Length: 161
Image (tube, rainbow, N blue to C red; front, side, top):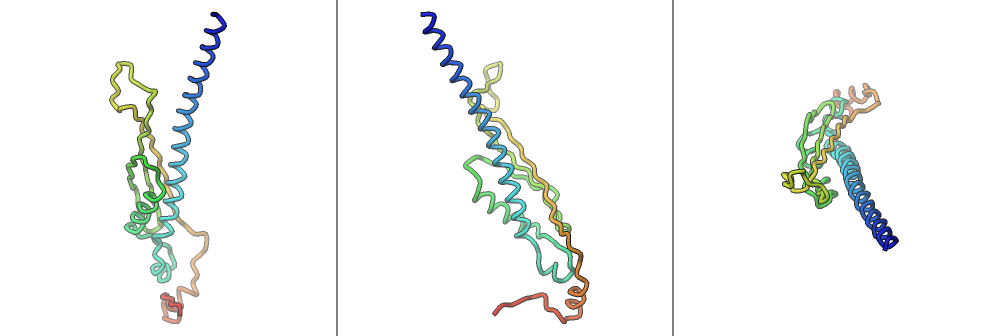
């Protein structure tokens, strides 16, 4: 009888350890995936929102805010999982292009409860991921191209045949 209870105890502890590891892995993997999704989506949306006409005229890079938000939401919705996300945009600057994006999600944690027995959040834990991105270039302004565009020698609108 003593050895049987020891075997049951070992099995119970093993199941408890597997459940704890699985719960921690879900939180860390979910947050890591959210971060990389946010990072890649923000960077790609900033490149999509660049105003090339403004660059051809002035030589400095500029981002269109509305185009950035539209591209970000389209890309994020296409790649996100089936969780509920709250997306907040902070400090959207057009010149130089800068975007601060915050994504909040709730992850279900069935193993947690409050000491009173009443769970105010219905077993959900908030995970917040914030990403700040500034798009800049290391290249200096090409004064010859700027002068040619200003004098009309070089047309900024390129057409292909």
